[in-house]
Length: 418
Length: 138
Image (tube, rainbow over all chains, first blue to last red; front, side):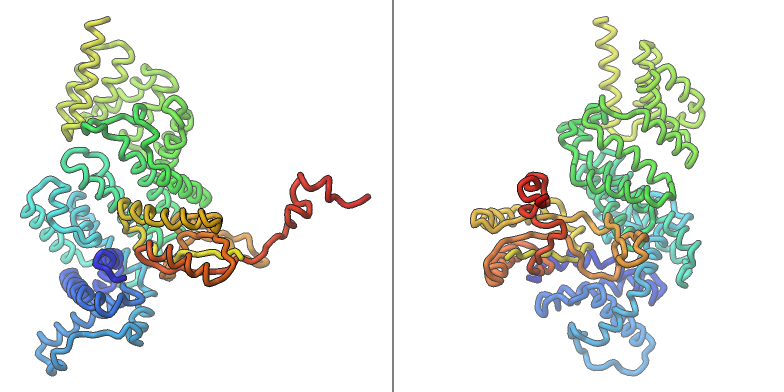
């Protein structure tokens, strides 16, 4: 039953816990990674023969730690090592039991620390994501390079530089107190959110790679929530990601053109993900500790529960965005609220709302896209065209540009026929 | 006798499965379930949402407290269950073996289903339909 697919799955699943524990032992990321690598190699050799250990993570921690300690001894030229024995571990080894017990108490903070070192504030967000994907998720440099549309050597350099910075930054290894833990959780949540967005927002590049970034973000979020099951914002974030990801197949048509929410075939939405997302929103709200992820998830939940675009409860969405504006004031939030306002009180009202945002959002694709759409609804064709053109110049991907061009074509057709 | 077959597996591992792998497994299980159904043995089946959606309430005098699951130290979680109707444990084991062969990993626990009818069986008047006939004599 110990097939290779199961072993690689088990190694991937165990990675954050094992690497986190090894990082606590050795304090140096490179040493921890080497030890993990070695432990995995031994697992690949031993497990197919002896069967999988009862607790793969404990086995890997034990073997990785012994390997690294042997290395240290060898380098220190201390007493000679026992004969070239293969480190064979009996699966019922009492020492494994010990290692397991030792680690269970640190389990959560080890993983949280490992995630946290990847989002050091000095690192630009793109580096945080790359490092987290490399270290925590164990993606290869090649895979990450493909996701970011850069060459493998450029990505290699970026990750090496980021790791050097992390090492210099010295994250404390004591068990964190409640405030540090909360701070780490917030930073790690943001990083997971960024990984998801990297996969979700840009439709350029390899679509398959993009989807796997979203799935990886969800996997990390699930892990974090298993460790901190009572954190309502972590629940909210997972709900948000699941509800957004449920629409993945409906967001692009077969030619990879963007399909807007209101035009999507709702039959393509993943009902299983939606059901789980809704369950999590409900559970999070019971905590009465409101947070921006929960509100964003609640907004996504309104869309997920609307049978058709026309059924959307825009008043509820407007109300939720109003809450979000007070929790997390940002021009982008106001811009999104304007969409709800346009449905409730008409395009003129929405336009009035977004005009003051112009100085802050002058480089934002969606600002000009929405403004163009509102002006179109008001029949101000020339102004609409100017805004759509501006949007195209700011588009991040070919799909975004193509989507706006579609609106321009429609404008053109309407003005010819009208 | 009704037997439940409870499916335990490490949730971290199960979550790592791709959609394609999962669909393939469900496809294989479908064959077994169709067979059990044709034999008249199959009762309700359920797949449970991840334990992160779970809510716990402690039993006892002060049972008002609500906890969030899961418990990180648990290695394997209950991910779903089947109920089957078999005359003997031997047959229940045989059915579980068929299911187990199509799953990639984890443990199946076979547990007989006990009689549990705090509301009375339908025949005793638990349902409105039976009420007028079997109602207490005046």
